[in-house]
Length: 217
Image (cartoon, rainbow, N blue to C red):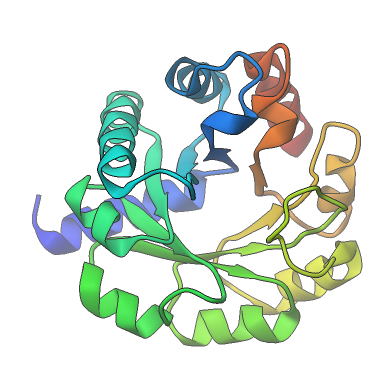
């Protein structure tokens, strides 16, 4: 498959993705990241984003390569958080940036045109800017209260609704999403979510994912 074909394939798979899992070992109730991620993919997760901020580079690359292999075998997209270099070295499908990471246009110069580039946004203006700069998708949040320290100011469902009305690229609602409040995302017009602790910390991650997927139909 040529570069254009590979790019088209990734974009098409992204369009079909409804649930993104933020993968971090510290949040796993069972203490085993890879087995937990595999169960989540089997249950309906379509994209896995490696989010390990404390690993040394060599460990991070090893983890990324192992998750990439796992995702490649299941058809799920694999994204690396923050690090375009690790994304390239692990043959990831994309890289996800925060507001304080390298600017999106500069990251695009590093990773090229094939890889997906996503961006975390916390306001309508940030979402607009991400779309203008060529982001393939955005995370919008935190929609609900969350214990994640770097999640940004609370976005809420009203601002999520405004973003969904204006931004034409895929929008993943993020932040404190559980089976008890995912209906608020739907009420705002959203049909994509990014999840972490509510799933990884669950006694039954697969069943939790299945419930969230069913709620998004």
